[in-house]
Length: 113
Image (tube, rainbow, N blue to C red):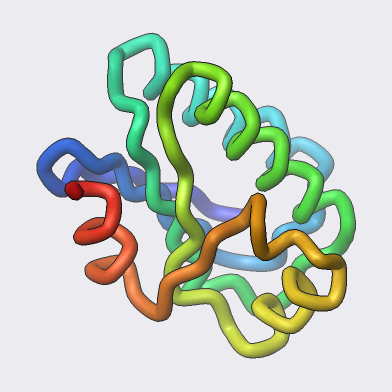
């Protein structure tokens, strides 16, 4: 799993590339989200456009990040997820927690409001 971040105005965009399976990746993404919170950046879009597969550990990692942001008064949105990932979120009934948008631009625009 590879991670990269960039700022789009008040929104931090974290792009993930590879399979989202948990393990050491949990620590890295969790650290990135908590670092953003500490820096006062509480609007995060997670770009899953380059994620082909995600298991329950990957879902749990995203839920933990969304919960941390909500607790800090922020918000996290999922952007650009594949049909397979969107179906997983829907089947597990996590759509209220992991709000999805078709593109990073759509998610960023929603977070800017």
